[in-house]
Figure 1 (cartoon, rainbow, N blue to C red):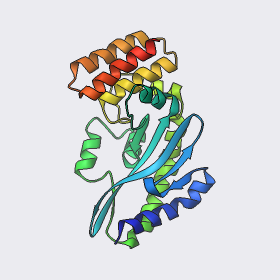
Figure 2: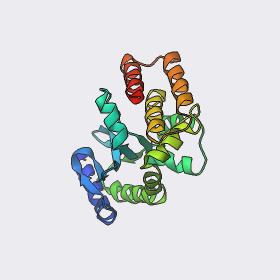
Figure 3: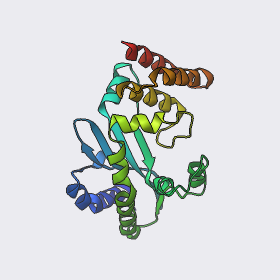
Length: 219
């Protein structure tokens, strides 16, 4: 079983959905993407690969151009504005989660699809499409604008947020989205995020980027 065969077959199985919903296939990224003036969204897969077994991790991802442009101007490479594992999103949508759910799913390998032969692929395609239709499309529609990202990150800035890679990116995305959406609590949020960055053991890249972005947003 070759990885390229698995990738090609899965993307082929998503082709009809992609065409019907204005997505395009990107083989290099193992993804289907939609590119608009305001944002780029995708359903994609990361993977672990062995000779006789492949683990696929299905994700919904969103990049809002304004937020990523500000990061880029200040030398910070932000991965996504928001992203989530579709299998975790199912639990999240049903309120069957807590701060440990993501770790438990990883530990129990419930955050992935397992492929042992090409015969498994049709089942994986069906499961992926089911997750996309039930949860993924709504996730992208809901969070593909600045206002909703501001609400997602800043309504309860201290709460666990499964939509980013950690507190470091939460602080940066939260700060930028609050500024762009003209959040009336921006000054308070700036202090909150500055304190979080100061108190936590973030790497120098994140700390420098946060300070640069904070200064940039004052101009």
